[in-house]
Length: 213
Ligand code: HEC
Ligand code: HEC
Image 1 (tube, protein in one colour):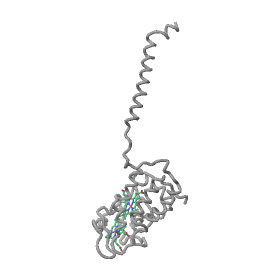
Image 2 (cartoon, rainbow, N blue to C red):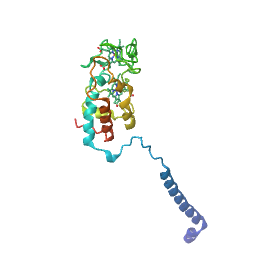
Image 3 (cartoon, rainbow, N blue to C red):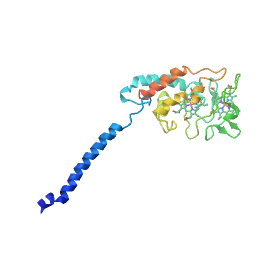
Image 4 (spheres, helix red, strand yellow):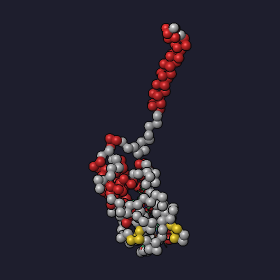
């Protein structure tokens, strides 16, 4: 009886079909991997071979001192009131962050901060999108150690859901660039925008390592 079962056509066919099927699956897999789109050359790839904790941490020194400079930190305060001036004092008249970061009631940022810098000393710097990060994603720089800030910057739950590519692109964000066009009487960030961007990309591409402290 057993022999009959093994030799019967009812067993032979499925077996043959199964072999055929696995050959087909194999061929589809080969074809699929051959046709799989190569990422475009311009796309930023995080190549494991490029990872280098020493170079990454070194580049972060420049990133950190830029982010903690008043031109950046004044919009990334620990509280809900923006900061002002080279000494990062609380913003006069205390405009508040609000849910969307654009202020509350009559104290909307755009009421005073125009599309461009207002000429003169102690006048509002301008940008068409001048606002703080929103209440649900406060992106605080003030008071953060290099270790804490590095961890926070790459955490999608704290950085506005930015992957590595989006983070790199953020180096040319309008509000970041505003730091290098601060209006009269305000100090520039400690390095040029080109130097900042280079350090920012190096830090990320070498693995976005956080300093020990
Ligand atoms: C006018 C206020 C303002 C200024 C000035 C400003 N930022 Fe921001 N920044 C924001 C806002 C708002 C966001 C959130 C927007 C977003 O996620 O796209 C943000 C987001 C960021 C992020 C992404 C958040 C994260 O944690 O990864 C980085 C990085 C950043 N800013 C860096 C800078 C740097 C560097 C400077 C100075 C050269 C600067 N910012 C100056 C308002 C500002
Ligand atoms: C009533 C007008 C007014 C409102 C409303 C206002 N600002 Fe300002 N802001 C100013 C003035 C004026 C200055 C320049 C002060 C100075 O240089 O002494 C300034 C400066 C700043 C600076 C300092 C820039 C630097 O590089 O040091 C930041 C940051 C800032 N404002 C953010 C905001 C944000 C964010 C809002 C909305 C939540 C806002 N402001 C609402 C008038 C205003």
